[in-house]
Length: 223
Image 1: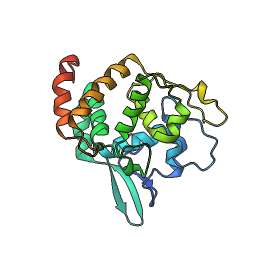
Image 2 (image 1 turned 135 degrees about the horizontal axis):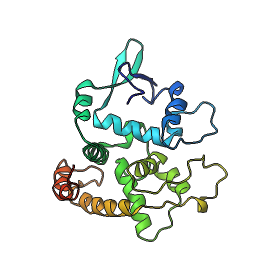
Image 3 (image 1 turned 60 degrees about the vertical axis):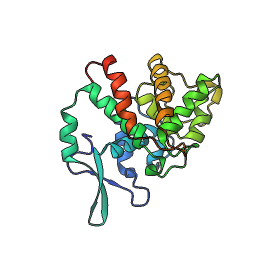
Image 4 (image 1 turned 90 degrees about the vertical axis):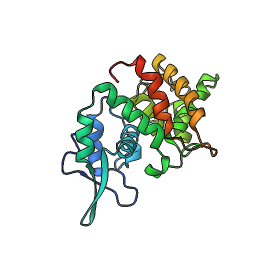
């Protein structure tokens, strides 16, 4: 958010993704930069940035603003002011449930996986693994979207893996490893989701957050 600042950053007119001129610098600011051999990459070439863009937009922290012949990604001052009053735990769960409830693939122009929800695609990866399926990061990334695996990692649900380009890497060498925290949370959230998913299996009820908050907050006193 510091990088976006008060002036905002330009996004592409067709996909509304972060402009190419910002991508390498933003990637270098990440805790674990993603390596790519592409010379002129798009936002989706950096899974962490692709996923974070989704979460920023659905949270309302970042909004799209037309400025003459440009479209800018800017921070919403009112939402940012409220955000800055939250502690670390409140910020974490706020972003997590925005992703769960509002993170639709079409916001990124994606057609990944079998669900319209980014989180449900990510949850499907976990369920495949928990049922004994051999989950390859390369294969799952190709079908379910690298940004969904990146978000699982950013929220602490999977262990850190290779950040190198997948080119010439044997899929057997890049297995998804779920953390103990990730297994507990995704098992719980998977059960909760089944209570509040609609008939099409794609959209979650607004009541999901209240239900989960009531059960989880006693376990996280600072939330």
